[in-house]
Length: 319
Figure 1 (cartoon, rainbow, N blue to C red):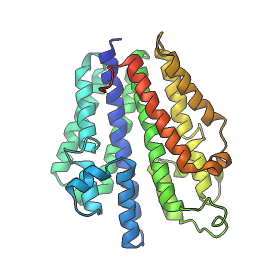
Figure 2: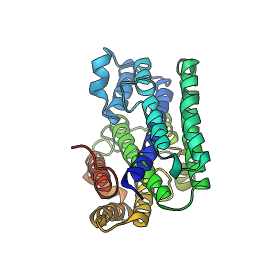
Figure 3: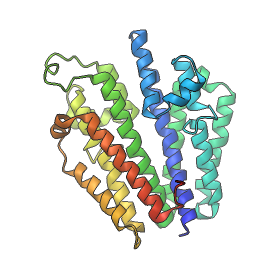
Figure 4: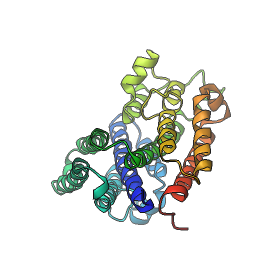
C-alpha cells in the first residue's frame, strides 16, 4: 500500500475517533455541570476540559471567561480550533474523499453523510437547544462508521491502518480524560492522610464512567459502590473494557503486526513493551508511584508510537 493512502486511512480514523472523544468529554462535563456545585467548581471543570485537549492557550486568546457556552462553542463549531468536532469531522471526511478507491461505498457514504448532517444540525441550533442530544448523535455516528468499516471492508492493510489510528487515538484520549478528571475529583484521595476520610461523589464518578461507556461494565465487574481506584483499574488495566488503555494497546499491537515491514521493528517493540506493562501492571503499584506521573508517561509513549508509525508507514510528519 502507498504510504499516502495509508496516511489518509490512519488519519481518517483518528479524526473520527477524536470527534467522538471530544463529544464524550463535553457530554460528561455538561452533565456534571448540572449537579449542585459551586461556581468555582463548575469553572474548574470546564478549564480542566480545555487542559485535557491542550487548548487553554487558544481558548483564552479568543474568550475572556471560561464558561459552559464559550467552551462548548469553541470545542464544537469553532473553525479556528483544529480539535473542534466540526474540524475533526471535516478532516475525517476529506481524508476519506482522498482515498475513496480504498474504501467501500458504504464507508464513504457514512463519512460524507455525517459531515453534511452535522452541519445541518448546527445550523438548526442543535447545540444551543440540547447539547446532550448533539453529543449523543456524534457518538452514534462514530459507532456507525466503525461498524460499517468492520462490516464491509476486506481484512487487508486498509482496515488494519484504520484500526491502528482508531485505537491509538482512543488510548490517548482515555489517558487524558483520566488524568484531568482524577486530579480534579480525587484530589489527594490516594494519599495516606486523606484516604480514610474521603467521601466519593457517586454522581461525578458515574458520569465519568458513562463518558467512556463504562458504567454498566463497572457494575458487572466489581458489583459494589464506585471507588476511584476501581475506576482507574477498569480504565487502565482491564483488557475486557473496550476503551481501557490495555484494550487499546492490544488492538494497536495486533494491527501493527499485520502491516509490519522491514523498518517497523523498533516501533512494534515499543508498542509491545507498552502493552506488556499494562498486561502485567497492578493498580496499587500505579497509585503508589502516582497516577498523574504514570499517565503523563503513558501519553509520552503513545505520542512516540505515533511518530514511529508515521516514520515507518505513513507520510512523515513535518518537523
